[in-house]
Length: 255
Ligand code: PEP
Image (cartoon, rainbow, N blue to C red; front, side, top):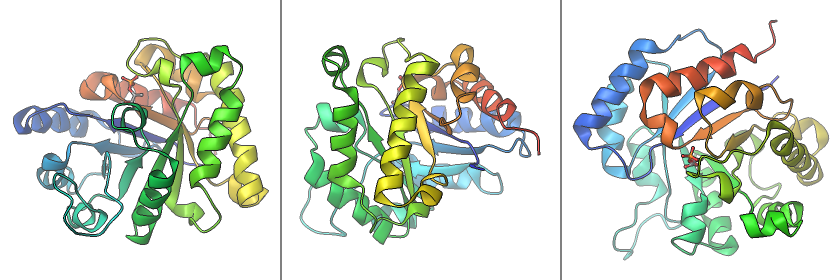
């Protein structure tokens, strides 16, 4: 039984006062016993103050990126030990904006995931195809390659989350149908079974990301291989993020 994870990727949004007000709304509205793990991923400069804002709440915090080295002459970069020091426990690696806007590629992402897990944090590794690749029938080839480039049995399974984010659905308002998403998630779980084993693959969470909103979250979260969501735009509005968390909670089978 995988505990759903709803992760908010704040991207390059929110000043400190905006972030404080967003977190206040989340803390006030969150049902701590809802059975869903909740993660916020603010920009780097917000990590220390947001750690303070979520102290004594069940909300977890992650970063949106990390450099693969622990320290050095890398102007403008932030390392895993620096992130860990803030209290963050997770790092998003390979988000499509990192791949497509900043040119990050498989070999670098491989190093980044290993740096994250070596630093004791959990890597949320993102994969996903472009619209052109989907229309050419290459979705599974693309995500298989992105997984092969980075995920290996040396990455501890309990420090790994996969996020399937079709590039054409991120920030566009277009969402994969629950069936389209489930098909890719099941394929990814099959690949995890090849890399680890079937039992271990059942323990690894696979999140869906791409224009998740209160109105489509329930159908997506109801799919057997969708274990939560990586949410961009809707994570910046407390009421919307809380509604997505509630949809994930409602999809958890009663025990
Ligand atoms: C994201 O940033 O990972 C994302 C999925 O964004 P959005 O929800 O806005 O599509």
